[in-house]
Length: 74
Image (cartoon, rainbow, N blue to C red):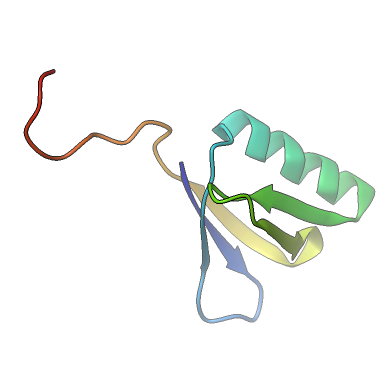
């Protein structure tokens, strides 16, 4: 799923493609905000993205399953 993260005082948003579900991302954000730690996300290639949870302005959770494009059987 595609996640867009808005960070306070930063003009551009951060986009991460991850295998995590929306519920997992939400739970991770709540825990990071409660603990005052970093929000840690792992993208589809295994790279880790760390964001200070208290600096997150918003998170846009995209669709969990994207539609395939092209010719093929349904």
